[in-house]
Length: 371
Ligand SMILES: NC(=O)c1ccc[n+]([C@@H]2O[C@H](COP(=O)([O-])OP(=O)(O)OC[C@H]3O[C@@H](n4cnc5c(N)ncnc54)[C@H](O)[C@@H]3O)[C@@H](O)[C@H]2O)c1
Image 1 (cartoon, rainbow, N blue to C red):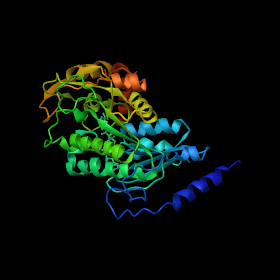
Image 2: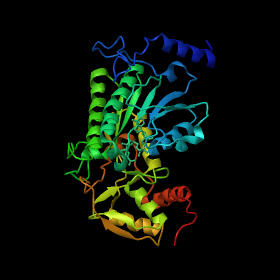
Image 3: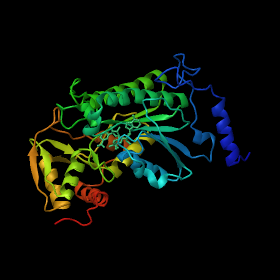
Image 4: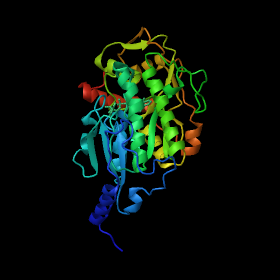
């Protein structure tokens, strides 16, 4: 029997509205206890896209107006095979990042704070909502912990309710100031539980725990990416992360501020590589956690020198005090990502820095490359 697009949509709507309604006031965490919440594993459920053959995959991206989220939106929308819903409270994200999709029939934008429950019928959830830069996550640390704990609980509750596959963007910060180098996924980390960064580090660790408990307890399909430093166009110009800091300072003609001792290392992954890794993880069969990052390791002084060479040859840098609990080394072991996802970064720092600088020049109104 041939089924029209309209009646297929009606069928889907009908089956959705026939489900018990969600009482969001009953629990701050989960949308609502569904009939199958009696401890037994829920029955398998076909994704919407399998029921309605012509329907696109419906994908929720929390934090989709942010830096990585907006590039993920671009990729999934450009595929032409998806409907994308962004839920964002615009704390660090911006409508500008996703402006090109506003009004597109396959795109929806919801102003929503993930610390409150949300109900949308989707096949997949990419859960990115969380400020990622120290300046912003330390601004309101209690809110950061709430976002990581309550926000993740709410999105896991939603995934369970609508049987969506759930991907968490965790972080290399779960390794803290690592005593193993490079960091493999088996390393449990060295994290200060009461420091000024703990709202983020420990928040993400709890978020991972929650995801795995939903997986073990409720059979939820989860994917966990441990993201290492990522950079590229659309990063918040004044968010204090080292690459954006150096490029913005160099373009504004002020000294780059290298935090002492300058020998601490980071690995920098270009955002298009990161997005590719996240999509492969979501579409693959492994729960993770899987490290996603670029294993190329640079000291902060080397990074400042690269910005000087590639972005603004007249730039200078000075050493400043460091912030507490700043990790001395950070480098992903991506053996798992290579073997399981067939993924590794392609864009080198030398290629990526000028691309990011071009975007910063435009936003800062600095027209030409400074000499
Ligand atoms: N960029 C990196 O180097 C990096 C490294 C490790 C992990 N990550 C993780 O990747 C994800 C995206 O990071 P990013 O660099 O794009 O950061 P970002 O700050 O640009 O994006 C985060 C987005 O989440 C939104 N958000 C924050 N709190 C929210 C809330 N309570 N409810 C709804 N939306 C909220 C913000 O408005 C923003 O749009 C984060 O989960 C971050 O922890 C990023």
